[in-house]
Amino acid sequence: MSTDDKSVFDKMETSMTEVVQTVRKYHGEYFIGGLFIGLTKPSMGWALMSLFISLPTIVILKHPEWIKRFKDEKVEHTLLLMLLLASSDLYALHCLGKSFGYELPV
Image (cartoon, rainbow, N blue to C red):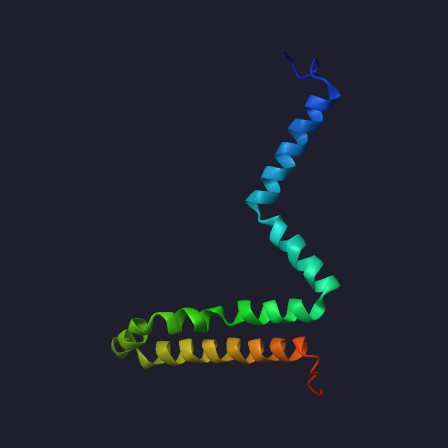
C-alpha cells in the first residue's frame, strides 16, 4: 500500500504519532504543564519554581560524603560551588516569597 493509497485517517494517525513522539522527545508536556500552572495558579507556580531551584542544595545535603571529599579539592572550586549553591538558595527564597505574595522593593 503506497502513501497515496492510505486514507486520510491513516495519514492523520501517522502525523499525530510523529507529533506526540517529538513532544515526548523534547519533554513538551512539562512546558505545557508549567505554563498552565503559571497562568492559572501563579502562587503554586512560584512555589514549584522555588523547589526546583533549591534542588542542588537538596542533592548535596542528601550526600554528605561529597562535602567531606571537598578537603581534597582546590579552595577555588569549593568556594565556587558554595557560591553557586548560595545564589540558587537566595533565588529559591525569592520565588518562595513571591508565592506568598511578598514583593521586594526595587
